[in-house]
Image 1 (cartoon, rainbow, N blue to C red):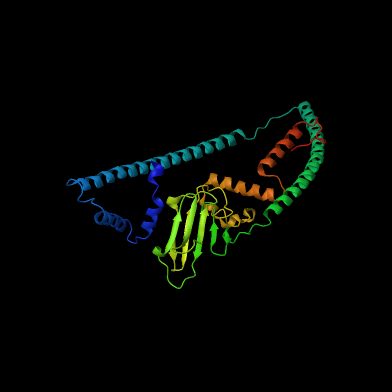
Image 2: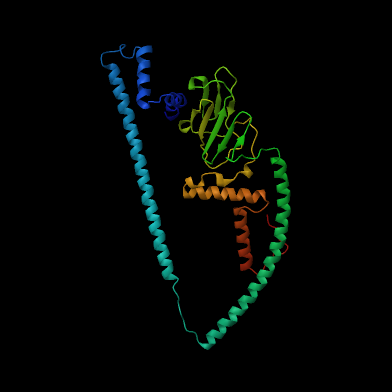
Length: 335
């Protein structure tokens, strides 16, 4: 039902954008079509057409109210869960402060002497571990740098023919330009004509996996498969100043940068994208954290340095080495 229901969304969105009077004008156009081109009003029993319209209205009104109610309930549930988490964290923090309170215990001379002896012994052991860890880290860093240099060389060779992103993290191509954030793409298509173009002069067809933009009777300026899928119902287009068609696309996957609009376009080097130009502030906390981690890993990898996951493994290894000074790691190799 969902796919069939959305089947004509692209065509209907184009129709809706051409009605400056809004929904009222769109509905009037639809009934005008039924009156002029069909026998909708006179082909059935008296009152049948009106009943059909009322039944359809009641059905979709019920669905809309149900969806609205479910959305409100979901938002309310999320607010309650957030409040509960906040209260739980506050309680845990309060307990932690109470548990971590200072404890003063008076020692005898014999106990103090024994404690000092243990501390001195532990200090000497830690110094030995630090020396071993430093030697191991030095060897590991040298290996990482060599592997990093090789990896960086391979990536540079692979990316050398890619375009540098423009200021909007997209590309300026001969016939059009595009920009992007993590969640959306905007395309600007200028037309070199001597007249002001109107909606009837252009062809704009936005599908989930493809796009076509051009003037009627002329070869399309853009035509092909998208780099990735878009939400048709949240995408749109408009004519600017009678000379430019602007297309807005909503990405389905809001966790990646596009390297091109359609698969036949030249690619941009996504490693050179500037995250500051994207609207990270518009993302929720969890998504923003994941995006920032992804960007950090991408930068680290391009410089031949360990990613956050690799760094975490190294930290665990160092901690293990510190806890087991009796083991010799100087000749060990780790991947």
